[in-house]
Amino acid sequence: MKIGRVTNSTYSVYDYCNYDSFFNFGGILFIDEQKLYIGYNNSHYVNIFGGSQSPTIEEIEVFSVIQN
Image (cartoon, rainbow, N blue to C red; front, side, top):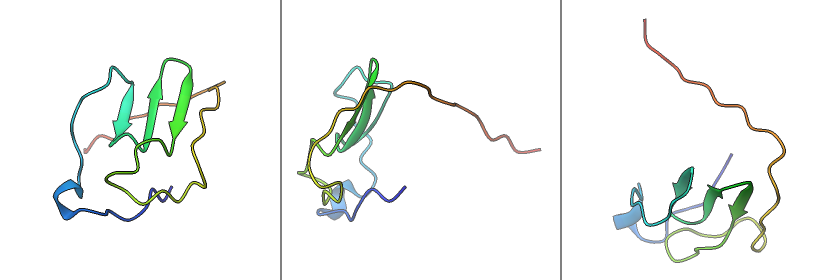
């Protein structure tokens, strides 16, 4: 999934926990409880999602990649 271009190089990898979310990509894309929040914090990334959305998550698949 393409998230968008960084608007400030200081935040090229924005790793700051300021929400109690399952995961958070700078506030532009994050999961909180049963919802996927898309396009809410536009201060660090270009919003390519066409507005803010928060659809309910019906199912999620999680996996890990390990090196042998």
